[in-house]
Length: 514
Image (cartoon, rainbow, N blue to C red; front, side, top):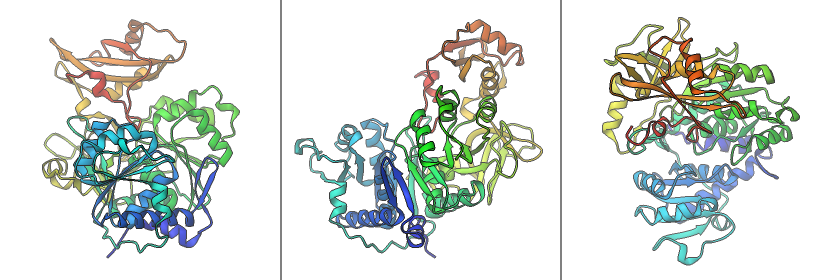
């Protein structure tokens, strides 16, 4: 049996070749054009010596070249290694070397970091630059062959016989955030990603060829790849590409292109909710808003729906689960504070420290098994065995189910605060702080305390022009939480550190010693 993830593009090219697949600025590319570019990319890579099973890294923003390169790599039977465009040279070098990447396709906007990274690794033999200008010869890493992406494609064949990969072959290696130590590469198979995209399109979001999906989440991230790019192309719809999130650019694109589907992270929806000029734009084309990547506050969900009349359907998943594991069903109102029900073919349990399943209402680690779970961590059998104990993927997230089976997250296992022997789940404290009218964002962490072991500290971002004393906010929380749960100290910030998926980087808030 064969399955290549590139089928999601090839099917559209065969059935509706002239339908718009991508819109980027003033460029409208049809399915046939994108598929042809992917064929040319596969042909060019093969000519350079890249073979089936090799790893090829992509360090590109949301632009048409990301899509054509991504599928070109897959057509060749090689494995895609998407790299965050915000990473610095040493971080890029680590992922290139750890993944055994033989080539890097990078955008000219990340030229300096890419160049520097390539001088640190030995596995990468080819550097392919997406841009108009070739770097000076002296700037090319010593001994490395470099090429301009568009020149390579111009001289390559537009016909390519797609490799017959198996469903279990690795299609993508996604590097996790690396809360402790170095990031790990989650190996996702062709079946992992294809089935997750198909379920997202057919059952969760009910996408059709008439849908215009806004791709503003980074395509190098699991949500952007599977839930936006793959799901849209699988359904024969159109992707509207934006290289970065800016509220005015998002709103302009929604109005101009009549966008129907917006998939984002909570931070994006907060900025759209609070953007002063949002009411000047026509949102009427939007039929569906989905959020993932981080917990969506109940306050924001309710405010957004009150202002725009659009509910936000929240889901849950990780890079290791392709990514979607649960979602709020669209045939009923989303349940505030819940990440929904397990998707088709996936089981989710709540387990204690001894891996015993817990009943509804009790807090434990969220564990997952099903077609969406990764093959393992690349070259890390020990870490894979630890994460996949007893046939379940252990997420590291703490959650509970209600009597109806709906899931809620209470925090990360490593974020759990133990104060005087009592467990405090940061999410519960954060929800209370977010209900204060002056508070925009809140992140709660445990800090060392000589007496209690850990003490509760909150980092808070206030609404513009709002002034609140820390003592008053502490008192506000004290009245609404048990005596051992309210924060003892509050630090105000202009913004909270976040990763590209919108998750707050609590390890940075705790400080280097944490």
